[in-house]
Length: 198
Image 1 (cartoon, one colour):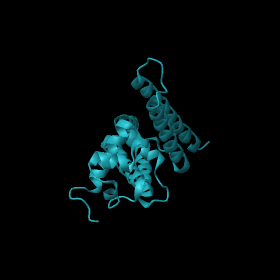
Image 2 (spheres, rainbow, N blue to C red; image 1 turned 30 degrees about the vertical axis):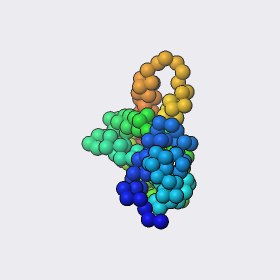
Image 3 (cartoon, rainbow, N blue to C red; image 1 turned 90 degrees about the vertical axis):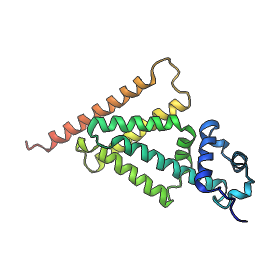
Image 4 (cartoon, rainbow, N blue to C red; image 1 turned 180 degrees about the vertical axis):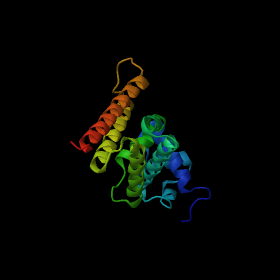
């Protein structure tokens, strides 16, 4: 069976993103995608290896998009400004694309070469954003892990309606980032103090 004219992987992924973002990741099925694209489900197999293949490609697409927005956010910035902008970009992505964001968390196969490449590039980006704090080796990776936990935790709680009080979420997020940044400054201060000869 030859592929339908005009049906390609980017078109399929865009339709899958629209379904995921409006109806939820669980609603992304080959049947729902075929209906949205006005094709028969078997036509999709020319581009994806079943539902698991579709979800895997959707996860990679989401990781690429998230990395892109975070990269754009930190260009020309450093220190607190870079971390704040990276954080805002991450949360904005999760807000704008809740289903696609969910796909980046649930579907990626850590053994997949594309997932590994994107994960490595993301860690490198965050390490560079944190350079101003002069963290070395494990300390830098702990800071990356802490920032990811902060960003994911906030985004996930927000997506699942976990913030029930009528307070401005952007203010809460800013205070959370400020607290994290204060911790980074303290880590930098302690590292400098420990490196001074006594």
